[in-house]
Length: 238
Image 1: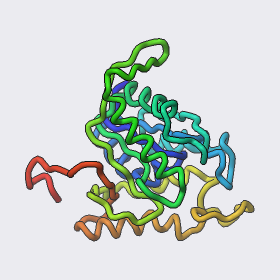
Image 2 (image 1 turned 60 degrees about the horizontal axis):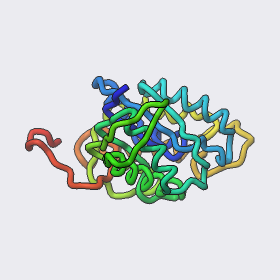
Image 3 (image 1 turned 180 degrees about the vertical axis):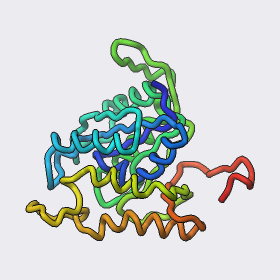
Image 4 (image 1 turned 90 degrees about the vertical axis):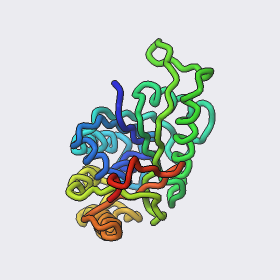
């Protein structure tokens, strides 16, 4: 299956939090989108890897993505080396996306920055024909995504560009709340974490509205890039 967009996240829920509204919008426009989670989030304070698997499936259904896979890397301990790069290269060559989304280049959780660089490096290496990979017994052809964009997570990193996602924030929030064990629940008896407060859930809405305010739309999501952003002509700019 060839995808238009392939979104990577170090943990299940990273993609939803970082670019869930963008994915929902692109799906509504007829784009084929997939999600690859690097780990199962097994070190998370709340819930378990098995529960996160179910929650991730439910979130994917809400966003309407075509496929979701989990590479099963070690939460907290995966590294940017040849073995991990090759596993990601296999996914890039399998789905041949035009655009890749990945974690923030710097963030509170150490896996976010690591995952960001790992995926970015693999996107480049995937375009080298002398790197040979096989999937399900078949040799894969080289493929390099045209664009690699990094979504914004915990830290308020200055975006290189923002995308108008007006009308899609409710779907993003619904996909985030599909992770029932991870976020605000006043009845939960589990320990509190930085993402379990009501303020954190509220921040999804007010961050999007603030970015939207700055560019004259209702809501927006921000991204950083690895190259200059180019427009076909001035009519393509908001």
